Amino acid sequence: VYVIAVGAQVPDTLQAVAVARRGLGSMAVASAVGSQVINVLVGLGLPWLLSSSAGREVAIKGRSELIDAIWLMYAAVLAYLAVLIAPTAPSWCSRGHARLGRAQGKLLIGCYAGLVALHAVRAQMSADW
Image (cartoon, rainbow, N blue to C red; front, side, top):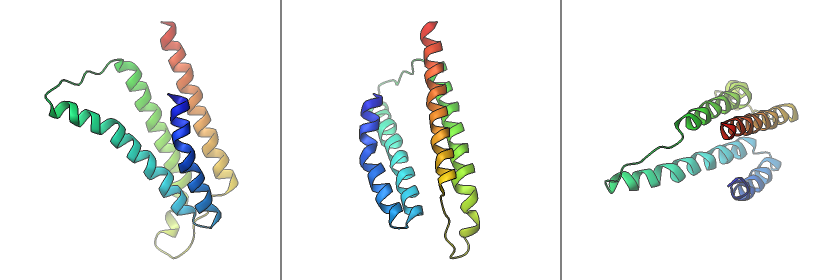
């Protein structure tokens, strides 16, 4: 599943890099975030809607793992807000440009790597039980 997920994101990543190199960083961030939101909403919401519309019960297995994943997603959203949204807030009212520097990029990559590692450790702990 991870290989498929990474492969599906390669075109989005290349597009975001191309747009960012043209100096349109906010468009690159919006594209990257927007594609993830669409993936989650369509990938989870549409099957759920179709199943429940057909009168089928939607069973949720592994509730504790789901709760862990929700907390990880919450942490990722907080990191996103702290690193990207908060520093750009002053440029919203003016015509100024917000910049995503190397330090912020490295911080985001580090947060992502930490979340993936944390998820892997939690999955391994769940498998051991």
